[in-house]
Amino acid sequence: MNSFEAWEIEADLQKLKTQMRNPQAKVNPPDAQYTPPTSDSKTGKKYLSQEIEEELEQLKAQMRDPQSQTNSPNAAYTPPVNDKNKVFYEILEIKSGASKNEIKQAYKRLAKKWHPDVFFNEPQRQLQAQEKFKKIIEAYKKLSAC
Image 1 (cartoon, rainbow, N blue to C red):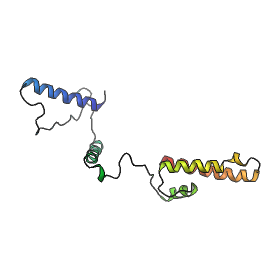
Image 2: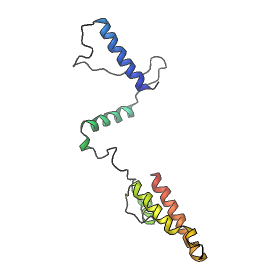
Image 3: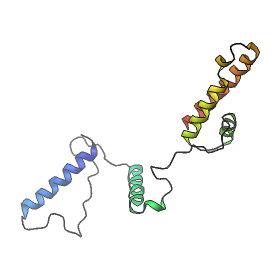
């Protein structure tokens, strides 16, 4: 059982206990707020760390006003751009800050163009293609890992 399930179960138990003590009382009065427990009573394991609480607050804010947030889950991920990555973008012949999908498409396009097996009749060009292909693979690995 994960901590969230335990928290939900504990909240339901609290409601039932309140209802059993006073069956005519409202289970969830509008002014009362439930505060989740900070640790499991059996194991002593803490549920929420400071970072998780901050992230939870950010997610709640995003849920309240989704248009104001630029980091929506539906937005395409763009890797961070720095001086090292600029070289890789140039190798893949795409603009800096391209999405993962654009990186993948550029890799496939260049892999078809520069794969050494394409130049099997031309040994000199095959060596050039091997060099270029290695750079393309390295650039793709670096940018797709970001």
